[in-house]
Length: 80
Image 1 (cartoon, rainbow, N blue to C red):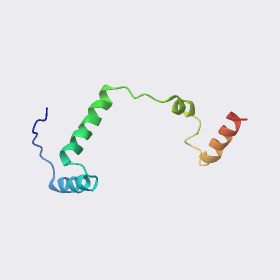
Image 2 (image 1 turned 45 degrees about the vertical axis):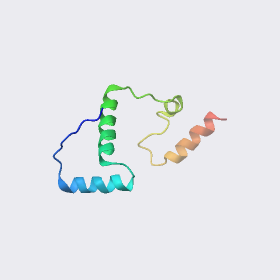
Image 3 (image 1 turned 60 degrees about the vertical axis):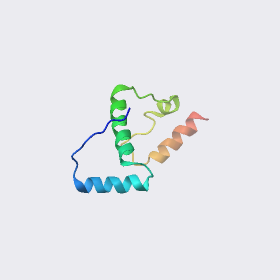
Image 4 (image 1 turned 90 degrees about the vertical axis):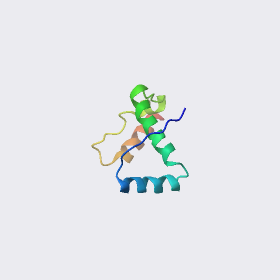
């Protein structure tokens, strides 16, 4: 069931949001609805990490400037 909602938002933000919505072929109402849904879902549902992503966690040091080489070395060792 849809319900009408009145919001007070800066005029410039409204114009930019309308422009964004039009360029992405979505209504401003749907854009805001999807945003609010993403906020509330994030707080109520646990994010599941795929096994692939979990297996790669920690592979690359964030302090390293040469992460491509580190990752290449990791893959070489893993598949040797």
